[in-house]
Length: 166
Image (cartoon, rainbow, N blue to C red; front, side, top):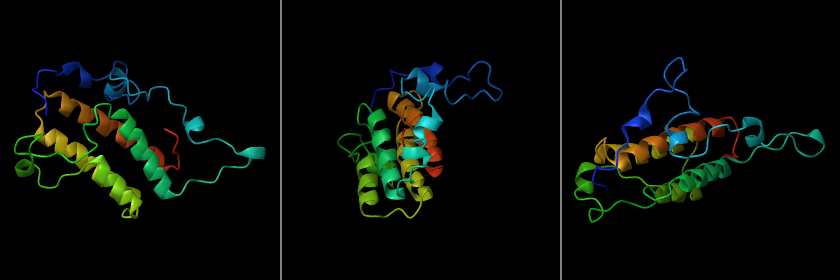
């Protein structure tokens, strides 16, 4: 899963001008071109419907599907799409005892497994935690997992607010 030679230590430097060193729209997601900077939250929420009526919120299952669609679109190399095998990553099953991937999450959504957003977020978090545990910090897969973890957190925050147009 990578040779560790493609690292970029500048990905996680605090943004100039932020109070706590973290600016969610001027962070590693921007430097990697993940397209969240300048997001119009009003437009993302769908705004008003016909005649000024508020549009009906999407069912939770559909919002979860949209979260996964958006995350998958950011996973350009499909690193997190399918289950990882020992043939792909030596000793993966020994190191990672609770594997998770986007395909499994999508199947769980389809089967109505998730009763709430916390359950979905836990599985999404597991995908990235596993990748960061298996791959060294200086490995590009680790870096991508960290960046997409940040994106996933933003998507889940928006989903909990009923915003599903990411």
